[in-house]
Amino acid sequence: MAGSGKVITFRELDEESNRLAQLLRAEGLRPGDHVAFMLENHPSFLAIAWAAQRSGLYYTAISSRLQADELAYIIDNCGARVFLTSARLAEVATAVGDRTPGVELRLMLDGVAPGFDSYEERIAGQPAGPIEDECEGVDMLYSSGTTGRPKGVKPTLSLAPAGSPNKLTQLVSFLFQPDEQSVYLSPAPLYHAAPLRYCLTFHRFGSTVVVMERFDPEEALRLIERYGVTHSQWVPTMFIRMLKLPEATRTAYDLSSLRYAVHAAAPCPVEVKRQMIDWWGPVLHEYYAGTEGNCFVYADSKAWLEHPGTVGRPLLGEIHVCDEKGDELPVGRTGTLYFAGGPEFEYHDDPAKTASSRDPHGRGWTTLGDVGYVDEEGFLYLTDRLSYMIISGGVNVYPQEAENLLAVHPKVADVAVIGVPDPEMGEAVKAVVQPMDLTEAGPELERELIEHCRANLAHYKCPRTVDFRAELPRHPTGKLYKRLLKDEYWK
Image (cartoon, rainbow, N blue to C red; front, side, top):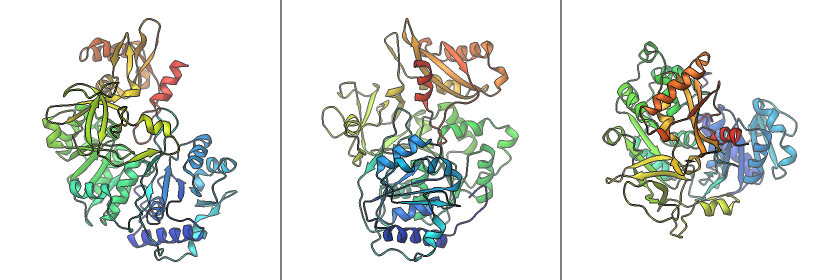
């Protein structure tokens, strides 16, 4: 644990996860049953995930930032029979008891609260060896809810013998070659798909995992030097925050151990990525995928430098770019991205959402709702999410272009570009900006940012107005809650 310095050995990880697995079996849970846990980046987080993973269970890691209504919905919707949390989150965790009647056992770490048993006491009396019927479970994670109620992504449960490699294990082995000497830095919340899955995957190779309790740009650099980090995973907002550190701070740390800096989760502005490669060297590796697991598109630094802006070519799933009717578009044309040949998934207890993710012609293709195009060499370029598209005067505007420009402006700390109601155009393009210095917010900075966009983009793609605020509603993984921003303007 990066902040506290607490170390969990592989023996301790193995024994704690075994004890919890033994308790879950003793409580009657069998392969295919469901557990849920809501924790901060806690020293026992990964042991709890491993207990479910090696017991053939579905497990749902829940955001520690949710309010009681959102938490109750997920626990009830996923069908959890066991719910685990920590004393730090007791206030919201205890508020959902009456609304989660399916939960048979509630465990709390670091203390107890009404309705909860002590996690430490309940596992203490359990055997430290593995259960007799060990088999592979799988996570069932919920989308971040950026466009409505969170969706539970339910993959197929393999129930393969415990330790059997899954597709991610094979991909990570092939692309990033981890081993017992590798050190993996995880700077994001563990309840999110990529940090959770990659930490468990690096454990499978015997690698050391360093978990940041929360992201801080300079602390991340210090940890790379301190632990000789070889592998890491980031989101573009983290790159932007590190690049905006003073030059003396950025150059004060030895980053030479870093061989693979993996990034995903959101489009990375071209200029940001170019600056990162100039700084860290050709160690950046980008992928495009989703919690749904229906595709994996990948580019190393060499491929990206030859095709700036690409997220790569597919290693899993075959890309099809389609128009609004589901008909395929030619190379270079922008449309909704569908993938064929990837793993099956469904949205739990939501056949309508599952159906909306399938192509309209019944070919078995699936979409995450993203928009993009493919070049003649098969490289994919993301444009934006379909749900974020602005229709202004009948013209489609994808806000990602203006966002990418503004994100690297020296006076901008964070930005979102959205469509707001306009009596003449239907929607108008607006930028909502968190300035580096809040005292500079005002008409002069607004004019400067609009002119910066107009000097680099077609005018119809540029914000007509800019609003300023102290902070934007962002998920800790870097994902922007645009829905919350848009709702403010459309109400």
